[in-house]
Length: 94
Image 1 (cartoon, rainbow, N blue to C red):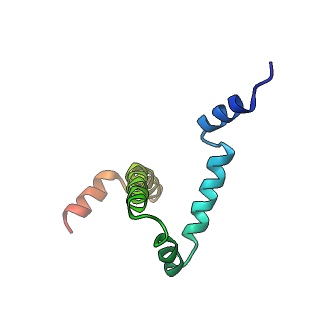
Image 2 (cartoon, one colour; image 1 turned 45 degrees about the vertical axis):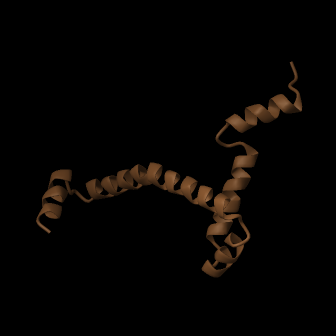
């Protein structure tokens, strides 16, 4: 059974690794590699309401990914032989 282009596009859109999402991710990475001045210059061309929405979406992603960073730090600390309780005690005494 063959799929139509429309059906194929709908399936690809649902995948995390669809070509469109991969390319958009690469675009964002390239944007992140640009200078502050270049990013600000480009952002000035975006309508303010869209810019606010983009910022809001990025903030949501940052919040959702904080756990990844905490998990990575916990693993590194554990590999160094420091327990969670030792870290808590150290931080409380600071």
